Length: 107
Image: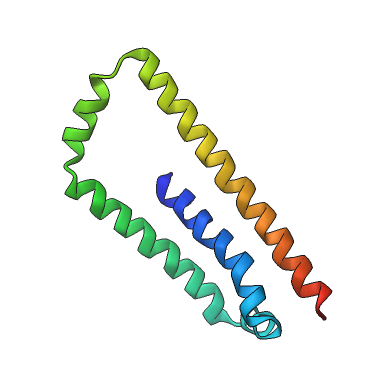
């Protein structure tokens, strides 16, 4: 889930920055298969990096730490995660809309 949210955050930045930097070139690039594979590859890289970091931090140690939390701390962590996920998806949607409007407005 965290890897997906990180991917959404990076994509949000790309949807805002790339139209400004590339303009019409981005429209042509987005029609190619390379663009689609690059987005998929970015997600796979983020997912593998997240799994590596989780394993590196010894996930058993992390789970033991979470088991020691009080119910109130667990509930608060759950709310923080839900807000992070919601904001990641909302930011992605807004950035797609802004980037699309910028490209369509400059045609």
